Length: 484
Image: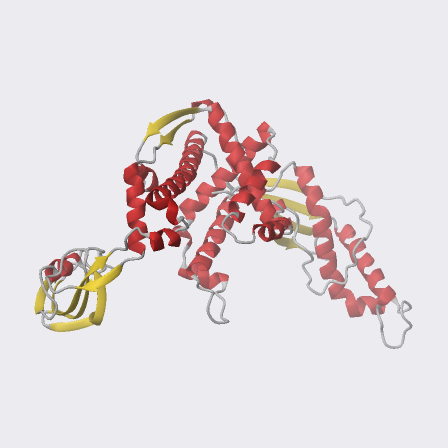
């Protein structure tokens, strides 16, 4: 969850500054002296948090801006028949008038927009969408800036927050389970002559039919499957149990009503099956080789392995408890302080979540054809991300207000501790630390995570924490919440 709300170094667009020059071929030089402009400004509320800022600049001011542009052009323009800087202004205007006009629009936009915001007394929460309403010489220069504003955030129910904090003891049974999983990771499969049972690995050929006709995707040859792992439909696994290698049989199977292939959902089918082999798992002994594989000295024996497993489980427990408490604080904070959300912020976050999913799914990993934003939006529509996006924007606004009102500052020692945790899993820890310290974006993310943790601790101190005993399984595998 860290880094969702503290976004350091926001681009000009997110700070509500005007867009750069509208003319991509602008000849406007940097550092021109800005003069005071006289303009008419009024703000229109178009929604709870949406505003339209109407700005009108006199035509005479626009013409002055055009004149400034032409003078700058005249000094350096090379026009056939004239020495540099000596061409008549009428010739300069004839050749470069359109460019000067576009530069004047861009220049006045950049100069007048910040002043117009101050004059109107509004602070944008998003980049503006600019519409030019009128242009000289026929009319004054007029434009409308559409943007969102931030909601008023009142954190007046912080003392009502109640959060459960899991209290979990790592038991011998938890250690036994972890060791069993470690052994299962290194298991072998040994052929047996007995009938197949749940937990065995089988190899089979099969072909499914609906009303005697084969259907697409219903055939497989020499397919391995672990019975009970859920790879096959339950009816087919049940039919395989009790058969030996070499058996040929037909299994009656009903596809689940929610089966992913809609044309098969709820349908009854018959599968012709040939069972090629049946194997049972063989787990490795907890011997010297097994101990060495898991970094335990032979002299320490199984007791050393159990001690190492307990330490690992306690570390996982502590991490899961922190995350559970943090999530609880966030949920209660949002529930106690509902706020309006700027639509542009939600839209921006939807785009960010979509980009994360594209990266996670590897949709841009192969080939040179990168997904365009339009294609990504078509493949992954906004409704998939809207709920999460609204949650992240709400947390951003609430936590930012809390940090600001409490004047919380980043604890650099905590930042270094977070970095230590990341480096711990790398062989060359010092090299990784140097890499992070040389990358301002990575360090900014770490500082955001540290400040978020500090905010959570401060919120817990204001609310009420209830210790709730639970098992390791309950902590690591929470039940999904019932829909509201």
